[in-house]
Image 1 (cartoon, rainbow, N blue to C red):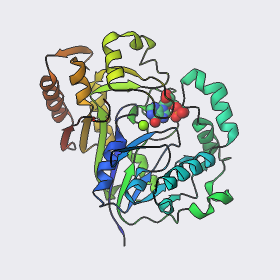
Image 2: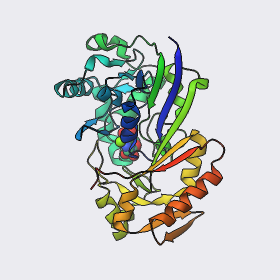
Image 3: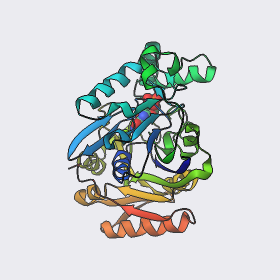
Length: 335
Ligand code: IMP
Ligand code: MG
């Protein structure tokens, strides 16, 4: 069997855009033969609800919750210890961990990488301190350690074949991409769909690109575009608390800001998003404040329908012809 089609789900902001929820919905359809991560490591954090039960993963793709082969791709970095911890966690919860495979070409995160990250980058960049940047540094210096050389990983090595219908699971988001983000306040991997081809399929196989974003922006970690003062804004603090904006991986409080619609337009157009999902609508509704930035103006709306109409019409107008659908979604688990 050959590759039939590839769907991709990516974040269009700074991570934490409820990609996990979308991937869960897509995986549930059972049309996928593989769910694959193409970038990053255990700096990511995915929260998935299966039968109302909450699960958290960091590296292993969410297809595992739906009995689908789950691949950690060649452009990912793998912390071997935390990989096995995650594997045990999944096994103990009754999931079939034999479906999990790691590319022999994935790079390994070593203790020295984590130490450097903790000692240096955590303070200057607010990283997740998981050794991501130092590990990718060694990959690109061509001095890194490959997953294929680690004896414990042998039973989990992927044969590098894909067939049937593929779902690619993004980690982080558009503005954390090493090429597009506010460098150096980015992560060290390529978070956009263009990079999913590193898994081993030609771009022509891509069918749909699901782009995930929230109706407001959030940022965890240091970024001059998200000054600390945002944490003192009483309205935005209400958004943080109502939306439970705390990091899955770090537990840190995220900084919130009103949606920057121009940035979203850019992210949609450059990622090639065909299906947009804007989530956490209910958070704004329950806070009862409706604002966004557009063309450097902060615009205030009367109610949820007005802001939704404005977003819908502006995006459809400015993101044609690729953008096909826009769905507004609630986050029933956040409150
Ligand atoms: P690193 O990926 O740990 O090197 O962190 C670099 C930047 O990306 C920091 O600002 C982190 O807060 C941010 N970051 C990395 N992974 C995630 C994620 O999964 N969600 C949100 N922010 C992330
Ligand atoms: Mg996350």
